[in-house]
Structures are given as structure tokens and as C-alpha cells.
Length: 439
Ligand code: HAM
Image (cartoon, rainbow, N blue to C red; front, side, top):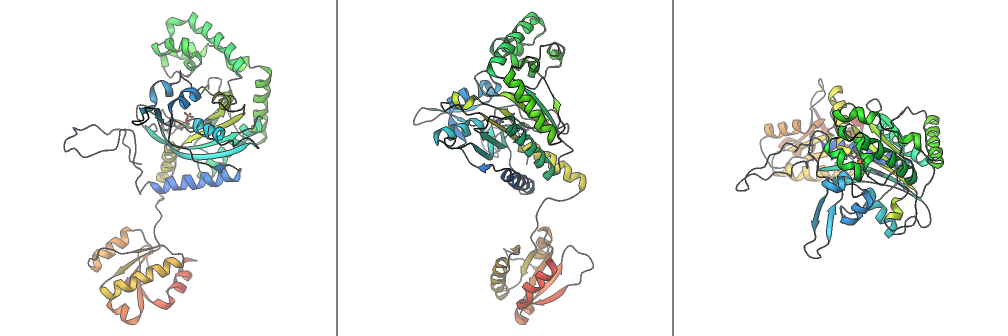
């Protein structure tokens, strides 16, 4: 990923066009890590029966306002919202995937007959201040289970993530925090308790928190302002005020996590930034990425489906930030000195018209047999072609020039292994030779 966080604006005239600030290019050198992450995630999610779905990147604005909540940072200040030029409808680039997925399940009656486990991945958009690990276009892996009421599914998703970390070699880089924010009635009572508490201490609140006191006092707990930490420490805790059902759900979640042998911290301050949550909330965090340390977050959202016009459907889900995971994966690679770039097996070098024609067919035949072959294009001397062969990362160069065409052979020059002699292989025996050297 080429970090465009620091891209500065230039005058429009004659300036080289740049990507939008906070929206990154993922260049070929970085792409293998992304593909590895996507492949691994897909394999793990499918193991748990989650099926892929894709929803649009643009949705009607009210979906997010109603779904995520008017008093959230995302809706208040981070959405890319615009008016459709023809219809005049207000549209928004999705800041997250859950609201769109719930809309799709309602629209297509997906949970009518049975519950659904689904997942997706793709770009999300939030107008935040870009910094390491925080971008304006970023990508999420998103997993949702719709129509499941019990804590077993909450635990399933947390365990699934533990398996993903292990498959990615990140299990020692992340840790788990869980909490319960109760049911709406519990939260209303808690909200009142918080309002009373913070109102009694209003002089200790910063401007943002004063505003939140009337809109969403729970979000005050989320403040990162160091000057606010003492007052936040003293606030009443949600976990102490859970109703019977939410308490049983949380105990159930803990039981499942304990039986899976997962280590977790109960973080009574964990409230999450979107309004649709109830009961279980969880985050996987790392201390390796500075301020943007949450690599995955989610929880239960039993009321969302109904509030978007569907039938009541208990649900739970999470999203993992792919940029943050790629940063962790890259850090791991740098430590081990390994390369993530897949290289072709061979680079086919050719000189002269007859060799060019023969190479073209030969490359296709070798690809038919399943081998990765880069065929040189663009002419040039043998020396410059060999340089390109080396730069491609191929294990060896296959060389076809006048002599080889005449003798129906190829010359093999090893590019990586030292001590290997250059050798001549008959074209008809090349696949057998490749099979022998690649076992
Ligand atoms: P979220 O906590 O807003 O939750 O985002 C989930 C993850 O996306 C974060 O933990 C982080 O890794 C990544 N992320 C968020 N914003 C950015 C950003 N600006 N730049 C880079 N990465 C970012 C949700 O989005 C919920 N929809 C999760 C969910 C699904 N809950 C239930 N189902």
C-alpha cells in the first residue's frame, strides 16, 4: 500500500494528478499480502459456513443515518454524502458494510426461511484525519450472522477470528477485549446514571463530551482525551447494571470462550462507535500500530433489522480492518526477511523471428501444463533480456536463439540456485524436465 495520507494539494493547472488524500494505491509489490489475507480469510470463513455476498458501495443516505445512528461520529462528520444529479436523492459511500447487508437481507427475504451466515470484503469510506492505520478509503473483512439469538454465535465469531490470526501468524500480535452493553432498557437506565454522573462533574468535561452529554453520554466513555481519564474512571459501569437476560447472555459468551481456551480481558469501557449494538461487544487490539490499534471490532445488533423495516432478527457480526492487518503482516515479513512476491517459474528469452514464433507456442504449452512462464516482450539484446529475466524473480531463464531453434532445444540458465550448471534440454522433453526439477 502506498500511503497517500501525506499527499499535499497542488494547484490544478499542470499539476500531476494524485490520488485523493487518505485513499491508497495498492501496488503490485504490496498486493501479494492483500491476496494472502483475502485467501486465508475466505478459507477460514468458509470453514465456519459463512457464505460470500456483495452489496453496493453506494446506498441511500437514510440507511446509514437510521442504521448507524445520528449521534455517531461516522454519521455526524465522516460520511461522503452527495446528491444524485438526476434523481436528487441523497446517496452515501458506505462507511461500513453491516447496514447494507441488513438492507439486502430484508429486501431479498434472506432470513425468511432460515438464519444466514454471510461475509464480504471491500472498500469503506470515512472522512477521518488520515494517519498510519487510518484512511479515508479503507477495506474491511466483514462477517455477519443473522437470525441467531444465543451467545454461541458471538463466541463462534470470536473463535473464528482467533483461527484467522493463527492462520496469518498474528496470534501473538493481538489480544481480545469483550464487554456487554446490555439491552436497550438496561442502556436507558445506564444512560441516565451516566448523565447524572457527568452532569455533576460537568466542569471536568471537554467540549466534545459536553455536547455528547445530551446526545450520547455513552460515547464520553470512549474519549481518548488524557485530561478526561480520571473522570471517566469514576463513572458507573454498564456491566454492573445489566438486566437478567443480558447478564445470562454475557455469562454464556464467557462460558463458550472459556471452553475454547481463549484468553480475554473484560473491558468495561468498551462501548464501540456505532449505535446499533446491544449485549456483546468485542475488539481485537494490537499495540504494534500506534494509536490505531483495533484490528477487528464487532458485537450483537439484535434491533437493527427491525429498525430498518425488517422483522425482528437477532444478529451478531464484526469487521476487521485490512490495512491494519496488512501492516502487521508486512512487519512480520520484514522481521523474517522473507518476500511475499510470488515469482514465475521461468522467464522465456528469445532472439530472432523464428525463436520468437517458437517461444510464443512453447510458453502456451508450458502454461497448459500448469507452469508460470513470463514470455519476454519488447525485443532487445540477449543481455538486456537476461537482466529482465533476473528482475522478474524467476527461478531460471529458458533461452531460445538460432542454435536452439535449429536443434529443437532450450538452454536453461539458473538464476537463483548457485552452483547449478547451464544446461540444454530438448523441447520435446521440457515438460518432463520441469516436472523433475519442480517436485
Ligand atoms: P468499526 O469498529 O467501525 O466497526 O470498524 C471495524 C474495523 O475497521 C476497525 O476495527 C478498524 O480495524 C477498521 N477501520 C475502521 N475505520 C478505519 C479507517 N478509517 N481506516 C482504516 N481502518 C479502519 C464496523 O465497521 C462495524 N460495521 C463492524 C460490525 C460488523 N459490527 C457488526 N457487524
